[in-house]
Length: 192
Image (cartoon, rainbow, N blue to C red; front, top):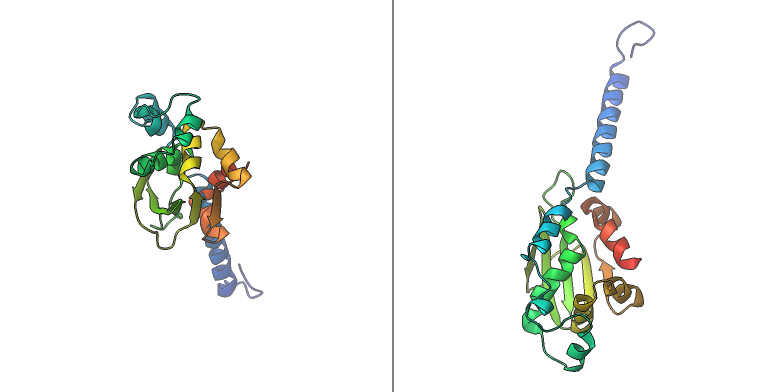
């Protein structure tokens, strides 16, 4: 950019370069927020191969249509809760959540099943579950053991559980962070 004298107008040139860099960074940020790595094929193969299984079916606690019988028996399945949660999170495709672009801030979810609290962290498609509270969680999922059993018995029930209010999601982080980590697909899938 030249001024009237034919010399370079330094402030305008600096602002132009700065504006270009902001535009480049902003568009890259949005692109990577919307297009994190998709681990769906990997997890589909793990389910198909039997590496990942529905724990209630794996331990012969239910077969198709026996969910109400299992609930009526009022079994305490706390020992299987973590496995059931892991399977449910795979079916919800939380493995596709990702760090905020250009940072190391991983997705963190707190899950409350009745009185039990679980911490979930997603890192490069790997879902890590532990039995404790999360610090600075992005969302909190609240449900009951009965609802988890129903979800294990009929995977199409997941959306019904959330839309009916039997299970719910609380947004703990701001919408910018949730968008940046890829939560919009998960949240929209639960609320449809």
